[in-house]
Image 1 (tube, rainbow over the protein chains, first blue to last red):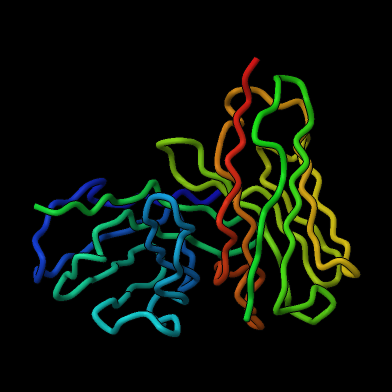
Image 2 (image 1 turned 120 degrees about the horizontal axis):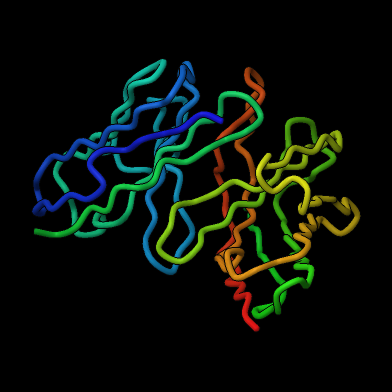
Length: 107
Length: 124
């Protein structure tokens, strides 16, 4: 199975900051990578698919980039609602896998 | 409007079989490219994909759990059923069903709609 490693595992930031979360795949996934936001007590929410496509209804301060094995999620001008855990997920082939998560906390 | 909802037991004893039902609306599993999956999250841990069923009844399983998992669909009821045999405390988790985003160019996809999740605890 393809392993995904996210960095950092946790991150402290302030409202208005820009943050970047990385996701590295153990082998190429081309651009078959998605990002999710997960708040406690709610299901994960799809933010980005196909590495850089913004899901409908997601604010434009979220953006994704990358290909093959290196990917990033950037959040510009952090808002209070953005403090959550973020997961990357690859879907290259029939066995999708998730990263271990990045916990974004308020500084 | 797409919705999914999980139902099943909240508590199980070790060695029992877990059966979870995903009831969905807003799409049909008879439509080409429609797929539904199950994903779980143990407390404090990451998300783990379990299984997937496609509109054409293709089924795919997490290799590490394949021997214990089974997925099926009832298109007349708009339901997908997951069974996990011989549970143990490590199977304690919130179980989610989710729809795969239609993807005409690849064999897999991401998950665009999720149920609220069903917490299952395995304890004697």
